[in-house]
Image 1: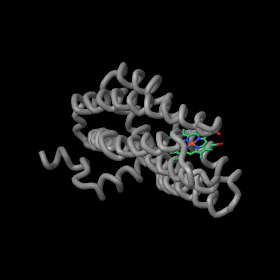
Image 2 (image 1 turned 90 degrees about the vertical axis):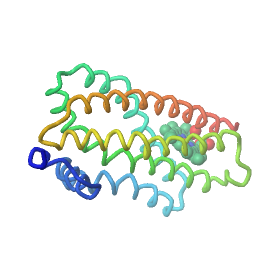
Image 3 (image 1 turned 180 degrees about the vertical axis):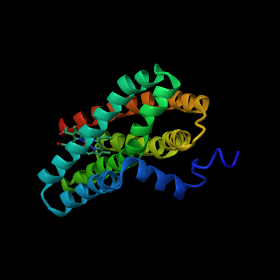
Length: 199
Ligand code: HEM
């Protein structure tokens, strides 16, 4: 058992080491640094147009990925054979695991910073409060259950004796929760439109 399990990560540090190896080190560095540094640079520029552009870029990226994941990749992966699924997920899961949490933090931090640069926190509108509450819900979802499911998926992919049943079940749970994420994100876009038109 111990031998068969030789490559299954036994703790968080080990999991991340394997994940960085699987995604490649340059990808891992960029995936974490770019989404976190862009909002900082945007804020430090002192120009709300720069931070707005950063927020738009990261927000569009997150939203597009959420739609693609929930509507296309999830169903496609669910329909593949066990081996094909493990192979596809082996390339996809480590990269997405490293990229999407920093992107979510970058979108929300740039949004909060932008609202501050635009002086909106002095008298927050209903849309701004709603955006904040939805953002907190998205972070809880992303760093809580979605993280747990994708970490489990990575463990199964990294293991020599991939448990295909566990991988498929995690994939299914992930697919269902990513639909909840998509609904929350569509609601956020409603609040963004509200901010734009002064609600
Ligand atoms: C969760 C993901 C988010 C996405 C996808 C997103 C997307 C967008 C988009 C597309 C715009 C441009 C449309 C517009 O001008 O209203 C925008 C603007 C803006 N967003 Fe976000 N946003 C997100 C989260 C947040 C959060 C959490 C906040 C703050 C609490 C925020 C604050 C703002 C502000 C202040 C603007 C400028 C509004 C204006 O032009 O009057 N955003 N966002």
